[in-house]
Amino acid sequence: MATPLTASSFLDALKDEGLTVVQVGDWRHHHRNHQGKWGPVHGVMIHHTVTSGTARTVDLCRDGHASLPGPLCHGVITKDGRVHLVGYGRANHAGLGDDDVLRAVIAETPLPKDNEANTDGNARFYGFECENLGNGKDPWPAAQLEAIERAAAAVCRRHGWTERSVIGHLEWQPGKIDPKGFTMTSMRGRIRDRLG
Image 1 (spheres, helix red, strand yellow):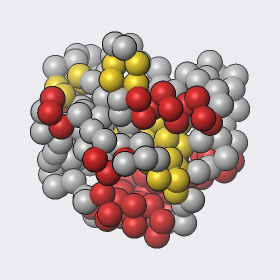
Image 2 (cartoon, rainbow, N blue to C red):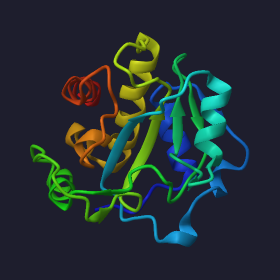
Image 3 (spheres, rainbow, N blue to C red):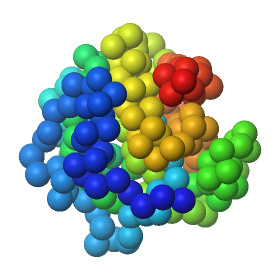
């Protein structure tokens, strides 16, 4: 269990991990906190956007849409490996998920199969949306995969978490498939190696 990093500490963590960060508008104060508290936080969740094009993807993740207001994450990781910060605080990214999965993330133990949606993930996870069509064919450039690794490791490093605190949306909520095109097991291996 951890208090969320301050926005400045979050930004510093990403930069310290060697990432190129783009600050979008007043991202530090763009959130959904009026819908409920953000925190304590327990992990990092990775998503794909089902979009293409940097500008369109970043705008969507910042502003959301009629049925799901933004921000839809904290950072958008585009194909060129940049992290675009679009919000900070509660964000509409995780939705309801499995409390057994949350307990495993907190304990940093192997994840059970998600089979229910009974726990608010928006209050408990940092979220990174990654630009990809999510069809299993759209490529994941090396720069983007490295940025996902670095971004997740940056947050874990600041909180003293291991790679087991990083999950995919598909491991949280039944019926979700993201991220599609790489495995979270392989990504957690990369994060583990980076954390040393």
